[in-house]
Each structure stands twice: as structure tokens, then as C-alpha cells.
Amino acid sequence: MEHGLRLITTDATPALELARTLEALLVVASQPLPVDELAAAAEADPSQVEESLSILEQRFSEERSGIVLEHVAGGWAFRASKTASDACARLFEKPAERGLSQAALETLAIVAYLGPVSRPEIARIRGVNVDGVIAGLVERGLVAEGGRDNEFGAIRYRTTPLFERIFGLESLAALPRVEDLGADVDEIRGRLEAVAEKRPA
Image 1 (tube, helix red, strand yellow):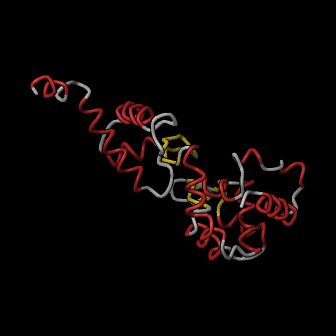
Image 2: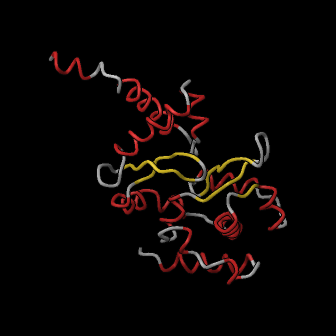
């Protein structure tokens, strides 16, 4: 017992305690969190946050956990491990897939190719208001906030790992190149629908 007590009073304890706090922040966050935001929320120095993130990276790695910590979209976030992705897709696939309209597919195509992209930018491309469509895609977990234009600018949106799983993509890099498709959003939408039809049932 004494040996155990000595272990938890070493210099590593503050980093471990901060790691637990960061873990909680990342679990409740709806989007990737950059180091500065994590530091502000945890009332810690960015250097301390980076040290504790390293601890979490080791704890939540593909080899050790069903949840993986990764740096994405300028911040840190948890995602399902590759080995657990099929089970996650089966859990969320039907609700996310149900009722995807043509407008939703077109918007998804724009976000997938141009994201992070703001609502005004999407509206200019589609020529219609997209507030309701974006809200629906966020609720289904297919797109998420990916930063802002400036500190107080328009929110920018990106596709999520769930989007990639639903459409059978290893990553966004698996999408056809925009240069190959041209600027025709309808054609991009058609490619996305084709990918969705080919994915395993």
C-alpha cells in the first residue's frame, strides 16, 4: 500500500489529473477542440495540455482501446477505432440514412468537397437557404462544426467519420477529385449516391 501511495504522489500526478479533465472535455464536446480551448477550459498552460494529450493518445490508441484520440480539423476529438467502426455503423446507419433528401445529399456533397465551409457559402452554391438542411445533417451526425471564419465569424461545417462510414469511404480522399468532376453539384451528388448504393448492406 505504501508503495502505491508513493506512486500517486509523483510529479506525473498533475499531468494525469489534467489528462482526466481533458478526457471529460473531449467526451462532452460536439466538435474537435484545439489546444488553446482545452487549456482555457481546464485552466492550464497549453504546454501542460499537450503533455496530457500525449498521455491520452497512448491510452486511447488503435491497439489498446475501442475509442481513439486523434487530431482532426485543427483540434482534438475522439472517434471509434477501426475495429469498432462496423459495429458503430450498424448502430447509427439506419437513423442517419433515413429521409436523406436531394437537398441533403447536395449539401453533403458540398461539405465533403469544400469543407470546412460556412452556411452562406453553401447557400450561394445551391442558390437556396440551407439552415434547415444543415441543422438536420448536424442532428443526424453527418456534419459537425469545424471552426469559424474568424473569431466571431460564420460557423464552418465539415463531414464526420460517421458520414464516411455510411457512404463506405475509408476517408474523404476516396471521393473523386473535384477537378475530375467540374463544378456541377448535381454530378457530385450522383457520385455520392453511387458510392452509397455500392456500400455493403
